Length: 219
Image (cartoon, rainbow, N blue to C red; front, side, top):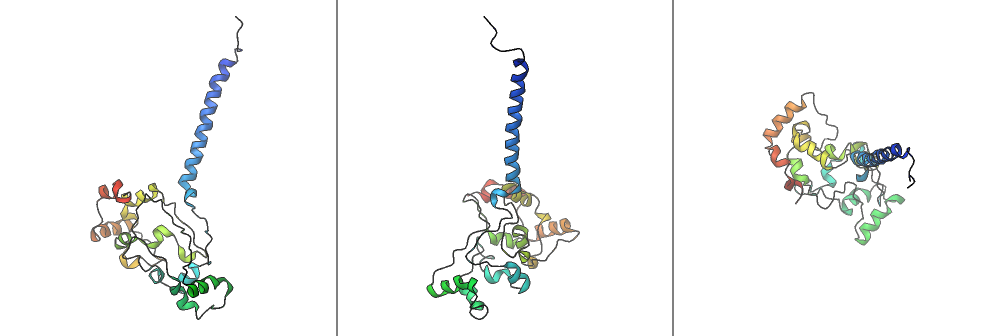
């Protein structure tokens, strides 16, 4: 019986298998790199909103505290989105005829709330409580980034499990005094880890074993 494959096939066959494995590994590696960078969480992407609200203008320019709009952040799992009346408190007097603020005026007239699009949108299987993080000394900027420099809001962190676990495993690297939680310009001191260990004890942060437990975030 004649030989079906030339002798060169003895080299080509294993070389093809190796090439396929490398290609497959490259694809998987690329997907992992995209995931690690946070692109699947829209990291760095500006999300279109009904009104182009500028945190830079309101926080840095006007000095408005986070809690003026996000009233529930200290007592609820959600920070809360301000009702139209909160916006209208100022904008019935200033920029009250600006075309880009017509959605605000229309919402106030009709009673229909503005449909804001969530920028930090965690999966439904993840439980995150704003109030407990605030109570333990986690600053707004730790998760949301330097919003006082954002003309339009965007996600600054990947908000992935590995990113959350880094803080849960090493809270002393991230905690700040409670009075600085809403200070967007606060910077960690040179002795941050020493300060952090003191705050872990002072604020009675749960042990690492509890913070790493699946049931802490997945309920």
